[in-house]
Image (cartoon, rainbow, N blue to C red; front, side, top):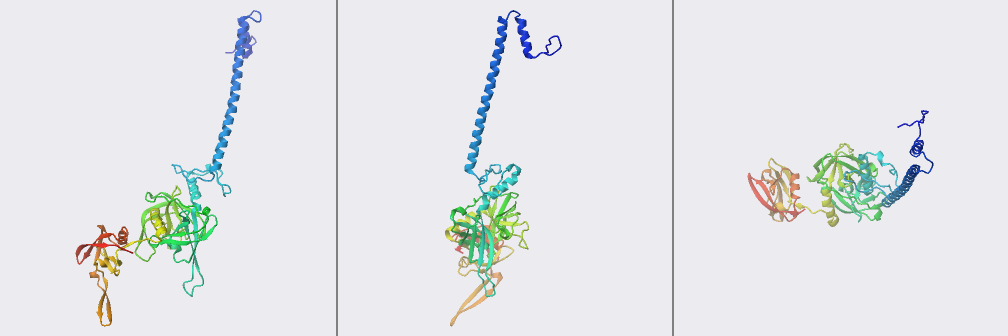
Length: 437
């Protein structure tokens, strides 16, 4: 409310209070009304002063608390240092201050998308576990001009120096050399190999600082469309990462063994794979190994967007056996060669003294032996109509030689299986004790 002094000027609040005091007590100074007015002003002044000093104290205490929290947070980061190896449930990685001396240290993470942060974290977690493998093979004939060299990838399995790679990377080599992330190299010995699944285990003697094992995940829960990452050494370019998705699951890939064997549970991916990627890890967004890159579908030997990886579950099953025994013991039905028929698989040739021959199965090819004076006369004979046809093993239908091998490998040497055969138009069930291959 505006108050004027008769000249239409606006009075300030102090002037108003003075006029009010004079109106209440026009007597001499020191009257009761005047004392009440002055006492009210003094009380208000004390409240203002108290509020002012409380604000000053609060500001000082807040500053001290903020400085303390900042120092504590910086100290905790300095103690842990580097990128974390774990992810939050949202699969968005959590980073800490990069290690001292790390090249291209991330100074500002907000500029990366969530997808980029995942890719960065996967590489930082696993790249030190990937190794470069160089092989040397001596000349195999006098026409060779010198030793031949090969290259591939591998990964650290444990801190005992075991390295896992593809069998075809080291097959036929006389020297295997492994180079680690820190530039250290060591000659490796072959601990064991399983050509039927294209897996080999090497071992090196090197300082523990060079050995950073990969964490192995689970491949049975993979889904088509899931994002994956491949790290390897294509064309000798060490620890190169590419990314893509799972294109298909449960593919079958023919093993490089010269037989009808198939590798099962193969993962198909579209991440770029090239020469030198064989043996490198295939990873999920958690940085867990879900497979080992092994082959591509290509007529030129270069990437076409169709790659294949051995599943982590096969690796977890086979590698411990290779480390313990050096080889995989497989069952044998005792059939050397087979051919397809409308009803199943026909037996072309049996393994001499094998499980099937001992059980009385018949093949299209056989050898007649007749004792004559001075020795034994042998005659090779072929009669397709004579051959037994295998229809099923333990009630599981068999349509091809590949399926026959796969069904047999579900069992162990010494186990007995029920083999249903078709002989001269009649079905017969024969019990066969599996032998060791």
